[in-house]
Length: 134
Image 1 (cartoon, rainbow, N blue to C red):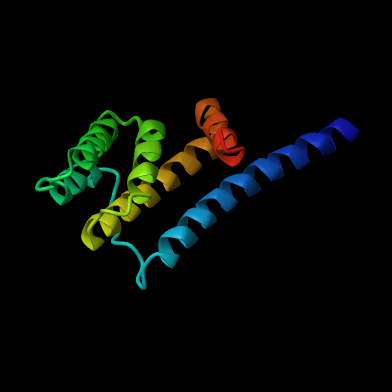
Image 2 (cartoon, one colour; image 1 turned 90 degrees about the vertical axis):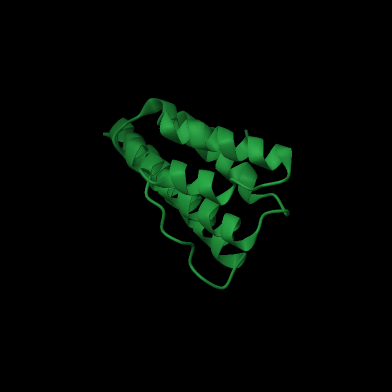
């Protein structure tokens, strides 16, 4: 009976960590502006991001946006999540770019949380790495 309790507590803590991660993401996005980010679906995210960065002058930012678009198109949501988080941290984004990246990041985070709840070990490992600061 004791080991069953330990497993239940472990599962609860893992779900709590995923929820905390999503909540912290929403709060960090929400604190950076006065409105909720534009909703972006996973299906539309690649085109939406490509359009938002099509005239970007900074080659590094443009390259990151292209990489995020490619990762989203190939459904590599773990890789896309990392790039989108890095893009969000940049100071040189326009308000529109930041808003669309935030919406895409939220869509990807929701997708990853669902995959984790369904037992995806790779996503679970990614969240654990995120929670421990890599």
